[in-house]
Length: 302
Image: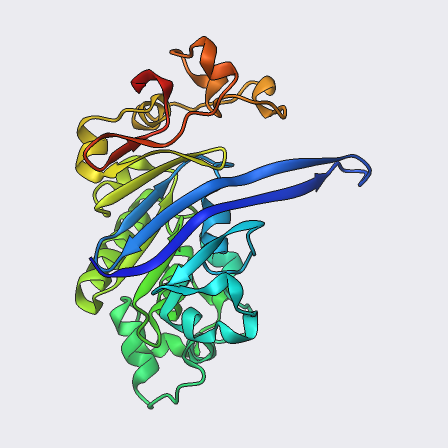
């Protein structure tokens, strides 16, 4: 397998202030997270709000620097490089953000938005039109501005910006999260088509497990900054191991009790798990291989 992107033991802590700006608390957004994205093997990152998946996306692009750990692009340690030396990487690994209403500059036309993504490459007269047509938009949309388009059309422009310049990898951070169900289906079909025609590799981030198992070959389940399960889409579909993965499959609306947010030791899913043992209150289980290429962080399997 040809490795594109890898992170090793990434940790990130944010300091959050209360509304008065007086009291502070530390939030562990990522805890010793390691993943590898290989060429043409799409990877899905799944978890609810607060799981750390968006922070992971930003760390992988070095939009947010980790507190510890390293990010590698084709075995080059990116965390050792200043931002000024990362253009080569960001031209080859692009991101589609969740909210097309916020991710596009309202002052830029579609044409200028895509040209910015192509810089410093020179653009041929028909290049912008070709990119728009690839994403299912008419060529004359290059003259439009974000406020003149629907949410689905804006997201197509965001996708056009991401594929401009022929990157090899796309990080899609909840790309359908702000769209209605019908538009979501169309955008997923578009991404799947681009994946095949352009030879792209996706890191697909979502809270919807049922979407990602049809799009990605490998699935990573995250909860409160930790990876709790990792396996092929087939294994996750047929035999989910972690109790939290089963919650996601059942589409349960899981609300954590207040106690879970206190700074404490123990399993991150302690207060949501019906199978917790005494050891779960004191230790976070390691991510271990239970079956071939099926990893899980749970004391049920030790």
